Length: 253
Image 1 (cartoon, rainbow, N blue to C red):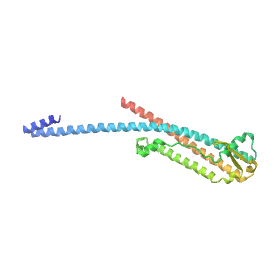
Image 2: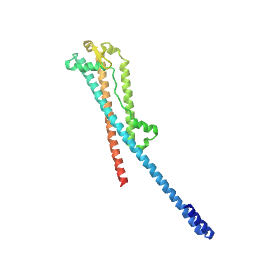
Image 3: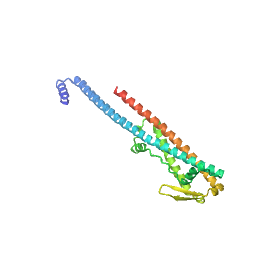
Image 4: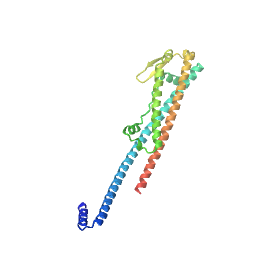
């Protein structure tokens, strides 16, 4: 093809048809430019297509992340509600200075789990991967980007709160040690042995249990907010995936 165009140019020059040669040369340049532009356009289309596929894969993986986070949040809410219930039963019994048979199990569980704040919160692995690789911009939906940043911040806050509460009770053992002794039945079971009457007649101890009720009430509230945000983001991911699927169908048609 190149030799063909060269022969035409040489013939026009040989025949002293300079004006025609000039027109031809301009046309040839224009043809080359059009070819280059078409090649660039095809290349850009291919690159954009690769980015769309990568974005879709990320969104699908984020949905899996959110499924795990949703299950984790549900478990955390149930666990913290259970701890709140036990703390309330313990407080009610201490304030009444009477431990009823139907309160015994929850009371014992509360004292046995006095130092436990082991609530698991799963990591947003794909979101963190996108930040590390600089691919966060592939989440085109700005609301989703903000939602994942918010979930990441809330997760970090819950972990810090969990650790702070654990440390606070671990470093303030004199109140519980005054009335409670722990027997380890095996590696997983702990039995609390306590003097109920002495605890019930100690206002500072009753106030301490009251503080625990407040702590677990606040933890339940925080986990429910987190749970709600996870589920809202999960619904938005499903909408985004459906939109992507519809866009692909339109492109094929």
